Amino acid sequence: MKMIKYTKCLAVLALVAGLITSCEKVKSPDPLNNAGQTVVKLIDGGQPGIRKFAIDFVPTPTNLTLADLRRDVSNNAELNRTMNVTIIDDTAAFRAYNVSSGAGLIYLPAAFYTIKPATPKTGGIGGRFNIVMNPGEFAKPIDIVIPNATVLDPSSKYGLAFTIISADADGVISFNRTVVVEIGAKNNYDGEYNLRGFHNRPGFQFIFDQTIHMITTGANSVIFYWPAAGSIGHPIQTPTGVSWYGPTVAPHVVFDPSTNLVTNVFNNASGPVIDIFTGTNSGQGRFIPSTKAMFVYWRYNMNNDRAFMDTLTYIGPR
Image (tube, rainbow, N blue to C red; front, side, top):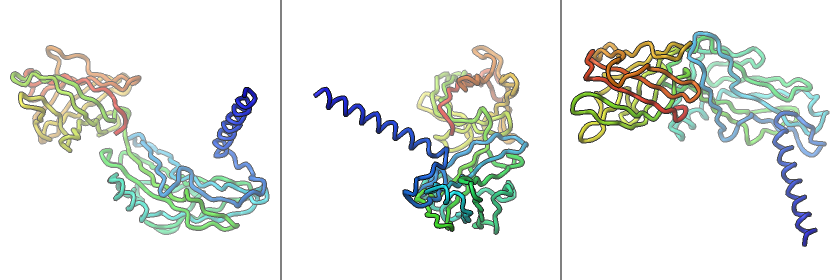
């Protein structure tokens, strides 16, 4: 009986070792010892697979690898063949994903980015990438450069889709042939938060507890967006339940990027004046990078009896 148990343990260890080895094969085009054909795929691909990028909302160039083409070869001779692969800018897959997921992606305008020359594209929207994998090459990325991410609307998400449609040199196209890319421009303060706070207006002095989004509006600024209302704005607690003043009271919060202290809180021009509150129960507005916690003290109409003391606990990316 002990020998049977010992044999079973060895079998389990062998299985684990095999799994570890198989996981490592993405990193290296180890030949398959003539055991199969050359398989062509996109890393993270599927029907479709999804890749997500959150890029800094800055006016300096951002480099992104949107799609990562691989060929898994059957032997060294196959690796040393030239292979031509065609990948399309798959607008149909993009639309289908948008409908099925409800992601609300905006097709990334061609004017917002440039394609690196190693994977040239012919045609505009729906065009083709004609990729040459030279002898010894097992990977080829589709790289782009976004020269200035501030042209993106930080409240929106952008996207593209890629699908392998052909490969010569006896290549077999994998199930992992399509990838949809999501791109959003966000700063370090952007995200989904639990908002707990206190409004000191007489008759409305209640604790509120809501989920809020802090949405990038600049390199170091965010605005309150209340998902329950589907709009920019800030919730309040009333004697009869949670409410708000509407989208015209939507504080923007500005941070000093070197200290992460709040340097300004202001409103859109169409609403009442909003500024930093320094009265009773206030404190130093700030952001704590290690936990992404945020503290904001603000008032409207320059009235110390119309102030909010907000504590925001980071939940995750929005």
